[in-house]
Every structure is written in structure tokens, then in C-alpha cells.
Amino acid sequence: MAQAGLTLEIAVPSARRSQLMRQRARSAWLFLAPMLVVLAAVAGWPLMRTIYFSFTDASLADLEAARWIGFANYFSVLQLPSGRDIYDGLLVDPVWWRAVWNTVRFTVISVTCETILGTIVALVLNTEFRGRGIVRAAILVPWAIPTIVSAKMWQWMLNDQFGILNDILLRLGLISTKIAWTASADTAMIAVLIVDIWKTTPFMALLILAALQMIPTEIHEVAKLDGANPWQVFWKVTLPLIRPALMVAVIFRGLDAFRIFDLIYVLTPNNVQTKSMSVFARENLFEFDKFAYGSAASTLLFIILGSLTILFMWVGRVKLGGGR
Image 1 (cartoon, rainbow, N blue to C red):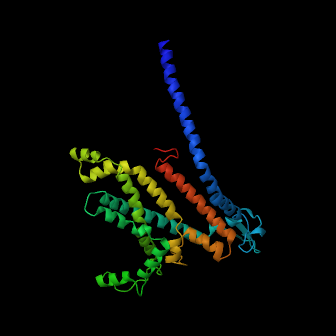
Image 2: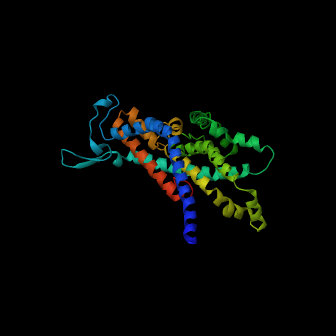
Image 3: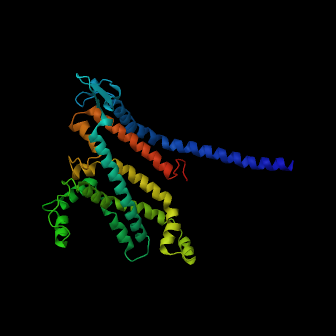
């Protein structure tokens, strides 16, 4: 009897907790419902239309006359009068795969550099020094400047005839002739990376700094008392504690970098060396009047981004329900 009574006492609070969790879940969905409706209207419907057009021969001149052609925009086999087969479609388009490679290379290099530099900046800003508040505000200026403005500003700075960057490098003796940074095939991607890293490193630093400030100072003090040097404190104590926030920052920045458009479009227009998947899709949608082909490129970009999101969440052990 005593054991049964104890079991009943344990079961009742457990049932109440389950009921409370269900009530909280219903309340959460209730509060999220307006946002989900708006999101479905402004994002879901255009996305479905884009996917639909990727399976048609739609033209920007007359979208209503689009005919269903299946996967022809993605891959198709055409037979020549000679009997020889040729392959056509996005999946065998070398220009598309060059854009994929440019996007992947840009994302990996930029996110890696921004994460490392952002961590260093955050560690510096997390220390006590005079004027720290002013420095924290100033470090956000590059990130606060609109991307279009940043691109135009750097376009002048990187100009081979009037740019200040060439002038500085010539005065320091680091180069012997002026470099056309945004026009040369060898330096176009470097120029884009420089501008993007300069602009977005403050964003990474801000997220990492927020995570650093959540760490109690007593943890670092105990580690130092145990004889840990600064590198060991960072590697064994600080980094594991900020890892969830760091993963979130990398996911956000990685997805944003993978759909890069405005910076490349303004800084290096019509440059094959820097053309990203978003630029490729935009060119086909509006400039080349291949609306269906551009829709197929946009659909593939969406699939890649969705797959990367799932991969990042799995690698970082970031669950939708929260926690690790």
C-alpha cells in the first residue's frame, strides 16, 4: 500500500507536468500562427510558383502561356538529325557548375575567415579596457552600412586608376604596377572576399561576444587557479561553452553567404570568375529571358540551402526543440 501510494504521488505531478507542457506547446503555436500565415503568403506562395515554373517553358513576356515540360530545364537528351545524342539542362550546364563552385569557394573562405576574426575581436571586446563602449559601437559600423553602399565604396577604393588601395600598396613597395582588382580574373574573387569579410566580421563578433558575456567569470578564475594557461582556458573552457552560439552564428552566416548576390552583382558585374548561383539565376530570369531556366536555378539553390541547413543542424547537434 505504501509503495502504491508513493507511485500515485509521483505519477500525479508527472501527469500535471505533461499537461502543462501540452498547454505551453498549444500557446506557442497560437502565438506563432499569425507569423506562419504571413510567411506562407509572402514566401511560401512565391516559392511554390517558382518551383512550378521550373517545370515549364515559361517566358517573362507571357507567364500564363507556360506549358508543362517536366524535367527538361534540369536535364534532357536531344537527338540530332545525325542520330547523335546531346545533353541539355541545368545539371549539365558548365556555367551553372562554375557558379556553384564560385559560391561554395566564397562561402567556405568567407565564413572561415569571419569566424576566426570575429572570435578574436569578440575576445578583445570582452576584456576590460578604457573606451570599450566606444570601440564596441565603432566595430559595428561596417556591418551597419548597406551592402550596396559598401560595394560602391570599395569599388572606388579598388579602382586600378584612382583607388586608394593601389596607391597605398605602391607607396609601401608591395606591388610594382597598379592592379585591376575587380576586373582581373586572378583578383576578382579576392576583392569580393575582402569586402565581405570587412563588412560581416562585426556580425560574427557581435554574436560571439554575446555568448562570451554569458560565461561566469568564476569559471575562468578557477581554471587559472588550476594552472591553465590562456590558450588552455580558451580551448578547454571558453570554446566549449560558446560552441552552441558559435554554431548558430556559422549557420546563419553560411546560409547568408551561400545566397550572396548584391555584393557580387555591384562589385564585379558580368564576371565569370565571381558569378554566384543567385547571380546566375537572376541573369536567366530577367536579362536572358529564360524565366523557366532561371526558376530551375532558383529551385536548385533553395534545395541546396535546405540541405545545408539540415546538415549544419545535424553536425552542430542543434535540435529544433532546443538544446543539444
